[in-house]
Length: 198
Image (cartoon, rainbow, N blue to C red; front, side, top):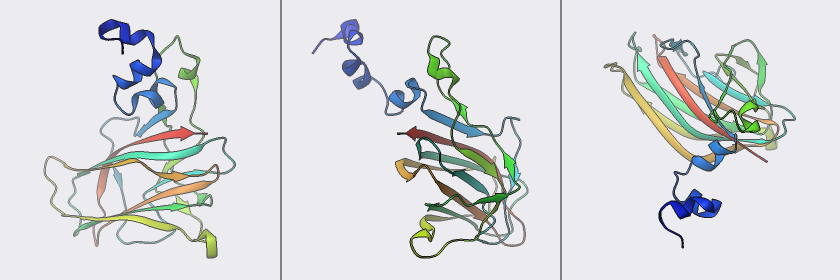
C-alpha cells in the first residue's frame, strides 16, 4: 500500500485516511441543519401530542432517502418545568400538515470547484409544525428512541446523540422529534446532520 503523500493519488487510500463523514460530505450529500440566526433558541412543548413535534423532517416523492446522522440539542434558559423528554419517531408517510418554521439545510461541501457544492437538500426541515394524525397498520409511526434529561439548565446543558446513520426514511417519509416538559416547555439551540442516499 502506498504511504505518505503517495496515498492521495488513489481514492481508496484517501478515504481510509479520513473520518466516517468525509465521503458523504465530499460528494455533497451531507447536510447540517441549525438556525441561521446564531444564538436563536426555539421553545418546545409542555406535553407529548402526536401532531406537534418540535422538529420534523419530511419529504413526499423525493429523489433520495434521508439518513439521520446526528442530533445535538442544548437546553437553555428558561429552565423547563420538570424533566425533559425526547422521543424520535420515523414514519413511512409524509406527516407534514401545516405551519412551523422552515430551516434550510446547509450542504457541508463548500468547494467552488465541485458542482455538488450547489446541491440543495431534497427534504424539508421545520420547527414546531403541525403534523398529520398518525396512520394505521403499516403506516403507524415507529417510536425508535426515547430519553429523559434533568431539568437543570447550566451554561447551557448539551444533549447529543450520534445515530451512526442508523435512522433512514424513504423517498416519502418523516422523522419526527418530540421534546417536552411539564408546565414550562424546554428551549433549545439545535443542530442536526443528515445524509441523502440513492
